[in-house]
Length: 335
Image (cartoon, rainbow, N blue to C red; front, side, top):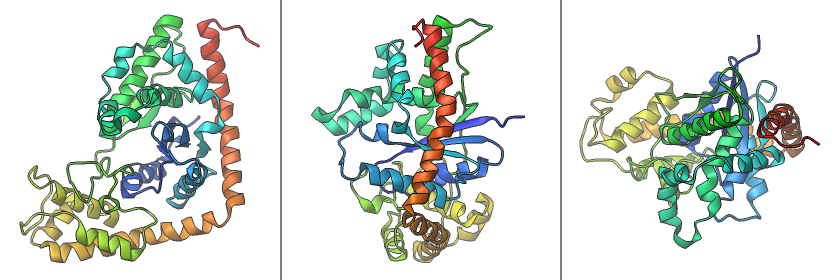
């Protein structure tokens, strides 16, 4: 029997960080044996905000290397670049023509990002969720791993699929499969080192807010030493008045591969002066083999480019028939 399919991706807007690894990539690694994973570099999404064309391609390659270094196996999973398949953009246009404008106007992430960008906000940023729907539905996955902050986007994807099925399919013969979300309870949302109420993000102007996967041991230690904390002694999970404490404990739990109960017992009597060096040592040790593999991969670009070429071929074998099926349902003349 064929494995159920998963689809996910990350924007190519800079170095990936601990939140990307613990909140997404490590989860994908664990799913490879059970699922047929389609994992892409979202470079079309990367240009919805002002970007530097000199580094876009290089960033895309870096993300591919990071996927593999973190444990994504190109023999098990399909790794590909979003823009290498024109089907993504074409399906996004078709979805634009059936998606009501008010569905996009209510998207929370657009409102938040638009405030930051001011006059620079683009139509692409507003239309981002429709392209994301095309990314997903093109491969008709069974499930989509999402963090809490992406639940609204996946609901929009499901709404668009439902609308397409209603307008151009039948109840007994829908055009597209409607995917289900997979929300991981632990590690789904790693927070900033400077503000425990905000998600760790590549777009944060402060490098202190995040630990990049490729940060040196010295940089990791320095960032953790400077991480925002509180004056209380004794560390605990799930206290709403101590978001930074909950976040740093959560990072330690995931990187040390312990249970929440074990970490709570280990750290309950610690002060920050004792805990931060422990967290820094654990983070450095956990990221060292990933960094070693990443460096090796970036020095063998021929291999990386071949992985992406193979991934494009495998992705296109699924994407092209899906797009043809949708166009036929919508009444387009076939070439």
